[in-house]
Length: 120
Image 1: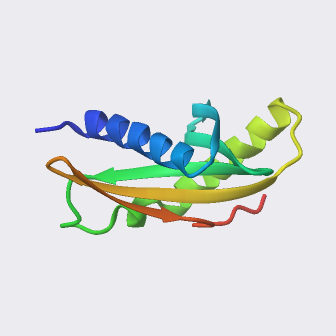
Image 2 (image 1 turned 180 degrees about the vertical axis):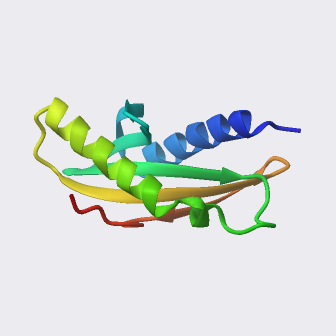
């Protein structure tokens, strides 16, 4: 049986490969700012995309994307702002969720573009 940390890491790796195959490019993985972590910061053309990866072993208790609280969204937004300022960037920003469910060796993927909005 997987622990949550191992499953989460596998999910992040799977999501990264999934997005790279879709033409995204990676800027940074697991960017931290204060109490927040952005799983993946990627480029989709000229747009900076903050990707939150939600991985579950079952949807018995709900879809993975339903486990992102308003507080987590706020923290992710603050972290992205910090990253932009730190690197003196000027990009449009989008917040996506990649929701994954791994049952045995099968993955189901739902990529939700513009999953939430952050206004500072």
